[in-house]
Length: 129
Image (cartoon, rainbow, N blue to C red; front, top):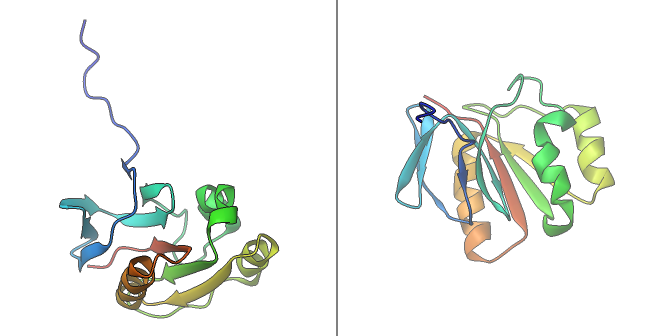
């Protein structure tokens, strides 16, 4: 008996540098993903924040579950730099994570450098066209 198409949560079970970004998505580990990404020590996940212009702690539930493995979070906020809301900064600080917002391009480049240095880094990357 066939069940039809099964849609699963987008997830790459490992850490990998981001090879390219733009056109609404990213390339990494010889794959491509359309949409935003959350790069954590446990893997790379498709990520859909409720409102990319008003991020909340709920958007980072997966990250908060891995807080003991992350020291710095790079937030690629799209084409422009946007400050993180105070409540989100406080939630991250409470679990020992420093957050650094920047454009998505800058976040990708910084993430790749810190990943190559084997640092405890995570990235939340909003896709850009």
